[in-house]
Image 1 (cartoon, rainbow, N blue to C red):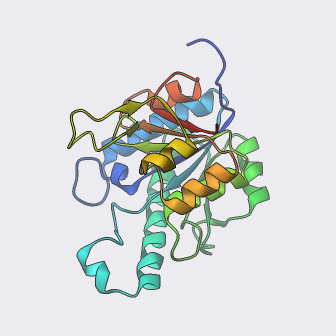
Image 2: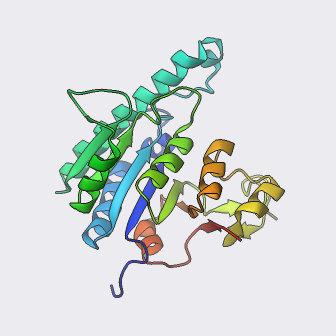
Image 3: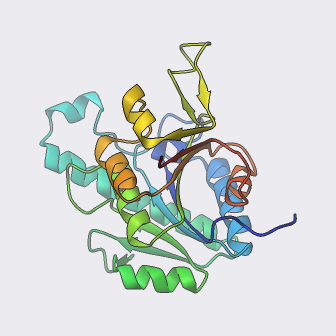
Length: 240
């Protein structure tokens, strides 16, 4: 392994779907440990790593029963689900020797620190991995939006969106064998083609603050190291 990482500070967005691996619900120990190994590797390279994790492996607002719930209540449940995921990551990562801190947007003093930007920066500069839990702390915002917000707040070099697919395609590659893969694409082209990189609010926040986004397949072993080293992995979404 040679060379220096291209990115010194990254915000990694992991969906709750990735936490459950091949299961229908809950947690996949193998998948979580593999993510931990990848994060430990880049952390040891000197890369400052912050994470935002979703909660879809525990609760999904799009589930049929959620359609009959009060939206604010459903979103609150979803945000708390991300705190459960953060605790699971903390336990798994600490067993690998990582120093990790959970910063929650919803006060949970017995199990997490409150989100304070300066505190987050102190942890990152000290080499600790930071997990941002409970989204933005407010309903009606997705964890994608929370990731965009936190990436800008901590002045990350890039927002990494870990998914189960290679990157951004012109159409759904699972439905369209002719789908075009993009190695690189501008914010304006994403909007023109109506590509679903992130939700509208999250994408606008990245575009307006010139925060580059890399969408990549987080299930591929060694993918995170390759991304932070500057290899052409996934899709880079950038300014003009």
